[in-house]
Length: 118
Image (tube, rainbow, N blue to C red):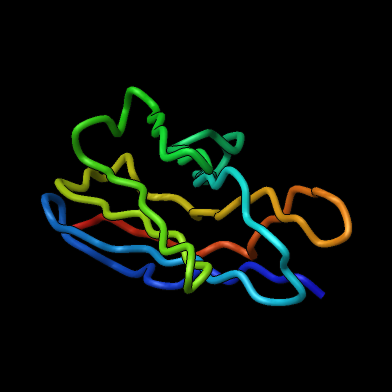
């Protein structure tokens, strides 16, 4: 059973930093594109960042220049470095990845809470 598990969330003051991690486990043949999404209370889930299997990155305008997505293919881990955090970054952050087992499928983690508040 393939699982994605996020960690690294927490409470941070405005202007602070956090690094989220996402670990993929199970019978994984390959990991394709990886993404981070977030969902704030009362709002729809929104795209944050994407890292393609070829190394191309895409960011939401709201996080450009502050967030960085990266991955360690050997460890099957994806990271989201978040700097200069703002209260509006408060949300549950979800990892999403295209996983190859016997076929490709899109998998989601359970989410990790990030709260930016003084």
